[in-house]
Length: 278
Image 1: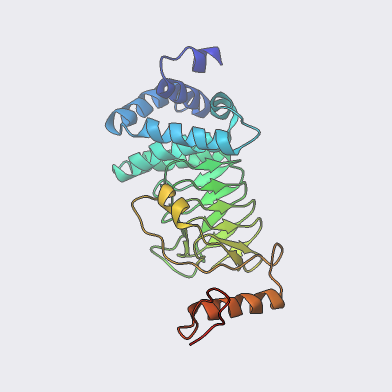
Image 2: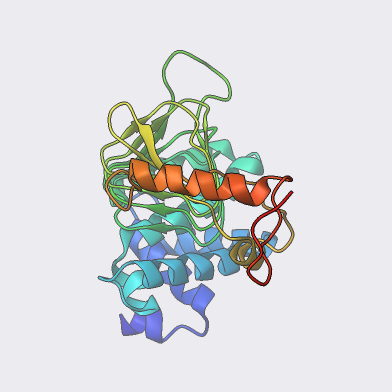
């Protein structure tokens, strides 16, 4: 650990050195991998920033990895994201064979099959890469959280752009399976072992086989503007989860009556004991 992490002059060097030692094979030595990673970082200077955001996101969300050092040393999800980001750069640079080799190597080392062509945003965390599958045309937004066993795949009935598109802040539970070219919008939660084949609206919770929306929440304008200051929030319906604070029928009718009175143009407020008049 002292050699591969603590003795390194920078965060970038520590990540590259540790991952290179982890990935080396009899055919591709750690020195060769290290030189290749350094070359990619030189050509794409934003990569270390993405690694730093990934490592922070994982440390904040994974209670078993409470700090950045433990994530770097022991979290296979972070390791797979590091290699994928390098492989993705190689893919878009036309070095397809080398990118696919790193995909294969990641699959063997970390049990994660992430196609080098797929796009993954910043600040993503993967709790465990065991059985993670992300298809070629999948797009993963920022701040997405993966649990183990997640699949972003195709239905087998379509070609071309055939994989899911995930918005920001999506949470995918253990064993969740999202199939087809569908949109899982911002803030959605897909429960463990759910199979989703239809689009999911923003800030919604999906569960079951097939997946169905059981709740949708509205984020206040103030919070939304803090999270996404450059965008405007659209109105979203509020539907309480059946398993939480579902209002009774009487409460619903009472709320509707109050809303009707507030919006009625024929009613005036009552002042100084006077009745309601027209």
